[in-house]
Image (tube, rainbow, N blue to C red; front, side):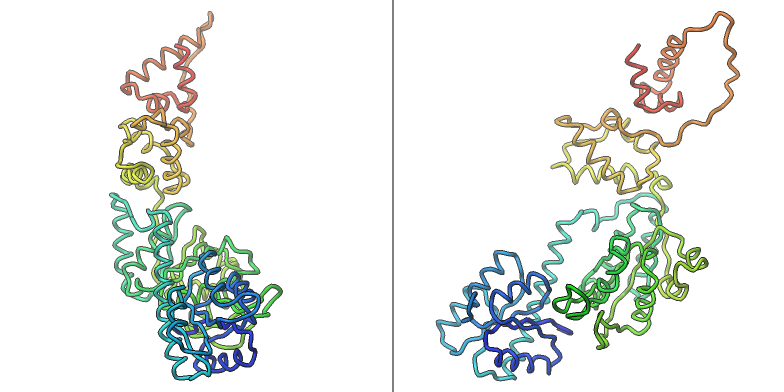
Length: 448
């Protein structure tokens, strides 16, 4: 495993340094701990690919450290150091969960062979953890539900660019599913066996963007107690998804451009050039071209990341997808699909403007299921909280108030009755005929 981070825990300083020297000579990056307690603290704060630990140490011995890792759900291969190679010692270590053991005095060839084998195991463990995390995440991330021609074109574009290594720029409003499309491209590429690493540039403090991207060396800044890999390095051989790329600070943009051009970078506070092989997919809801013209975004970086642009259409422009998506989200909220949408509810969903796009639709379905309670159907009444955010245009009705006046309440009730009859008693559609929100229309109907 390239650029693997290894932690050595041993109370004998001379033995630690000897082992570290052997490993660093073979290209590994090594941190050291003087006992089990110090090692546990370091493992809590940092990510390592392998732990090499002495069995006998003060404060916390190797076996106690191994048990503590299990309790705290810190997963990585552990190689024990022992001064004697007895069968009992090795069996006890393996039963406790150790991956292997090495004996003192150290034989460099045996150590490097053991470390290489355990790092292969570390890679498999990391991939399994990532898979479990993705399974736990919102399941629509691995499913694209659509029927519209607009989304069919988007998927076709994604499928055509996926086998290449070209940078992709996905644009569109918030909530349209830009990360979902990025995952689709990754899963249909030759990099699907490696990691898909997302990073939301807008969710990170500007001063921390560089360390998140490229990692940092021990002592690079206050609080940097040990070396840490960044997203760029973590995504090597895979795909790095930079969401809200328009919010990346200018200084970080310059370093990102250099990393993309040279396929190598330096950690914050470091001098060593680290080679990487990463595919970049970016997403934004901002106009980067206009930002570049105004000097708010580097034009040279824009040219580098905007090789293959794909625009995600808003949900209001692909109404054919609304009901299929709603039914899909409904299936995620219920077991055995035991709750259904009525036709009136479907009509109401189609008529709504969806300013929050697909994300808002998912939230609406979740809320409707809660409000429906034990009822097996979601009706338009279950969606009463949806109001058309685009009011009816004001028009001159030409109505002239008679000298003797009118009964406004009687006219309102009569109009409400006519509207219900015209729409087959669909309150949502009737309210729209009268230029009212559904909530106000329900109040009016209750008076009749």
